[in-house]
Length: 362
Ligand code: UD1
View 1 (cartoon, rainbow, N blue to C red):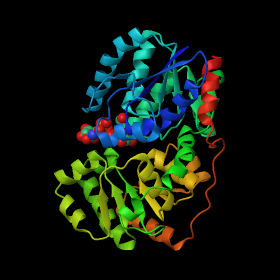
View 2: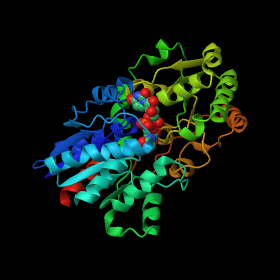
View 3: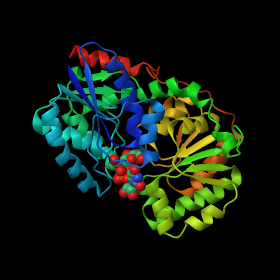
View 4: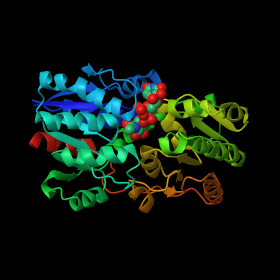
């Protein structure tokens, strides 16, 4: 059985890792790995393969950046002949990035079945490119692996037959658990001269938050005022850095004393920073989940989330996209004790094993 696993952007790599590992263990299964090249900088891609021990991709489409349409179309054009040549029995896609949808569309048009890992999540905000990617991928996939029960409910409501839906848990947690001991050995706190539980960890990169001048000014306000409440460490996504520079906001951020602007970090150092943070401020999907497992307060700089269990069971709180409200939320979090981390159902580090079993049974 030949199974082709697709990854393209940073948040895909820690999801594909455990699935590949579990499949590689099985007799009669040949897992192949395809990288679309959506992310290509060493710090956005290669470092994850090295640190997580993911094998070199069998194919790299090398698409690079572009408008969403161009990027999606380019992946489709390059993937079609590769898919025909490799002729896999099934293609596994993960998450909600442009690579996820582009490869799923090609499979649908070529008659190759798709399995979607992290299916069923819904923000109901159609302005998010990821929401479009999620809904269309789920519509076309034959096997839907959900990380939480709300995913099953969303898919059933959309008319997807129950037999296609499998609640398996969260594969990101498999990787988190496997690498937590490795992260404890990271020297990143010393390197940045910061103390455990005495800093906030920030990541912001959603187009809606950073692309416009207004958005960039708003996050600048959040960073400047927030860093007066507690030191902030901000590993900056290239998109965000680009916009802050373009809008002339970079120099004042660099000058702020309690704000550490750093390059994007690898998996292990970033996990260490999460483990020891007093709180996280983010618009990422994955960090809402990881902080829930680690029991770190997470202030999500968005109006809605496709990951509601991180609020109902975890440590996540939606603070909207206004700097002033988010600053109040920082005050609240600092005044409260650290929360207890409670793991949602099946976030037990064993999700990929369940996925591999279902794939092979099929
Ligand atoms: C993509 C995903 C998003 C995910 C994020 C994580 C989509 C629609 N979005 O957004 O869901 O949360 O990845 O990072 O797929 N760039 C580099 N080096 C790289 C990659 C990108 O400098 O290796 C810069 C380029 O200027 C590029 C910009 O970042 O234009 C945006 O990259 P892109 O892949 O279009 O989307 P992300 O914002 O990274």
